Image 1 (cartoon, one colour):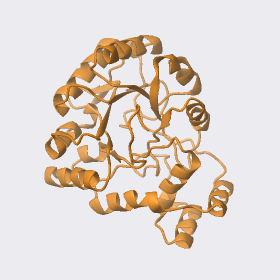
Image 2 (cartoon, rainbow, N blue to C red):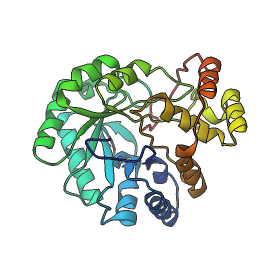
Image 3 (cartoon, helix red, strand yellow):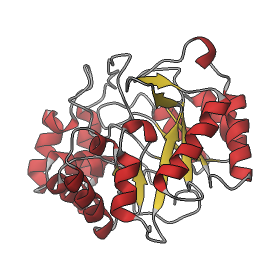
Image 4 (cartoon, rainbow, N blue to C red):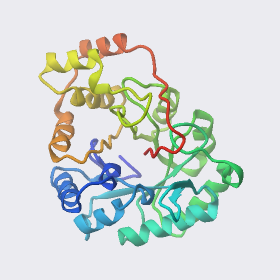
Length: 294
């Protein structure tokens, strides 16, 4: 469940479609995803043209489609990514998402905090207290502009502080190789909050972020199960906690089909235990300060 709506446990993250992907290809991938059962798409206006692509590919939207966007950053006049943490900027971001997606309400809006890596860091007047941001998002929810509030890139204390607002989901970097957010996941589990990990397979595009699909334990598990390493990495996340909803992104239709099929991969208890024992140390990925992350 996400914000009270039933969604498939494997959704789609649109971020990669904003990066040098032919428009026709991007539109085809989005339609393939929805035709394949995806009804949860994650996007953000600051990813690039993703919202325009989603509108072109899918509008008018299927009744069961849950579009989730993100605020907290924006593009400057030169195309660079900059923080947009102030309450009025969050409101502007929501309004811009509504316009570009051509909808009257965003089912879920995630607040991307910029206190910790990965990605941008808030400085100066962009260091805004969480309560002020939540008050603005609650006002937008009360006005019907958004359906539910989510958080991205937060720690345990921030999530605990925000629970009074009725948090629908949390997005943090997390994978079988990087479990530094395990305490946040535990709090989500306790309060029945959806857990939507980004970088679920790591990311070869970011320094210090190891690739799940290259880890020997994952490769060995895949070989024993007749699955791909990507499918094992995603299946581990689904089996690890029932609150997990996945949004793996790709610019390849073949990889998308592979990701969707991960829902059919059942990891035996022995395989889960072996992965847990052989990948026992969480990784702390290093990131460039200007990196785009989910």
